[in-house]
Length: 416
Image 1 (cartoon, one colour):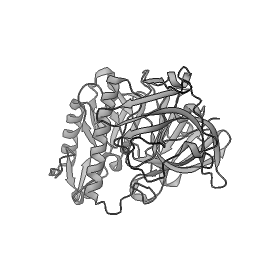
Image 2 (cartoon, one colour):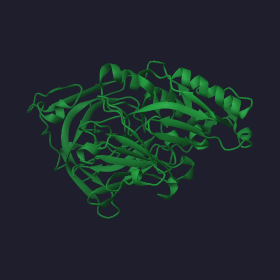
Image 3 (cartoon, one colour):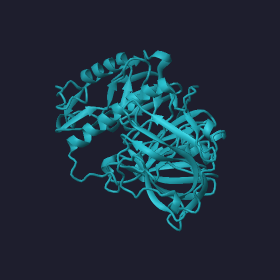
Image 4 (tube, one colour):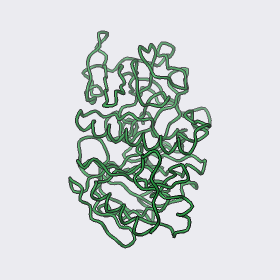
């Protein structure tokens, strides 16, 4: 068992079994989060969520062109961890769309502001630049080079929005809070970033959960993980589980869909159709309905034709007067008070072999200004489509990399 953790919620690690791990995920807007802004209004939070989703979507599109494996974003979930000996507490973004684990390090030639103290490798007795530029770990990076000292592995990630992280691959002891003395994972490979800038929202770095070799789950040698995302309004933390702690696919109400074969490390599904109000709309998506399931994007991005048909079906089913969002970040909004007068809305996403029924909490979100807005937007129409985290609230979602499938089981995630 090796090391690491990630997410777009702050995670507090609890080791339950030698063959499994369970961590708590803290949403960025939770009072427990270092990113929490007590003065933020519902309008601020709504616009911020939509803007971050759009930025992340655009970076996904760029990444397809430059073959990078890290997508910058402020993140929705963070993870609490400690690094080094003695351990220094940090908060990192958890991300199923990334594989590299990296932390800002001193000396920092250019770093963005973070809430935790910068990690200083010179003060740790377990830090080592022992990852060579010809190592398997270095070769797993999309862009890397050799340093002048001991041929250490250098990494360099650049993004369309001018975000970046540059530094060296190294190994270090990562410690996670188990409610007792902490559980240590020595010799974890991570990026020690000395030049970092962009949309990382004061987090110390990022922990990836993709299918890449340097991701947390790969370094832990776990072939499956799951999470159960609570509604943010609950004030509770979500759960992320690894290994034998994962039991989603065996649940009586679970449905499973195969992962589609891709070489980019992301988790691709096949979306065949969507049903709402008895109206089934076939997917016209290029690539046979290819859609990426992602923990880091709040909203769904759907093929424009599919989106337009869905929006029209929602309008017909509700029969209410829509309201234009003042900030223009959502396409379809209603006065929240008017939605309370209509029955519970459901929408079924028909993935190959798995029908996932979404409820109102997954379909609409708080748009501020007394509005509830459709948590879906049209994609650019070039085959990049995303199934975001709002659609996954109150579902146990299992990523079984060994069996190459994703499973969904509806649940009250506040009880996990």
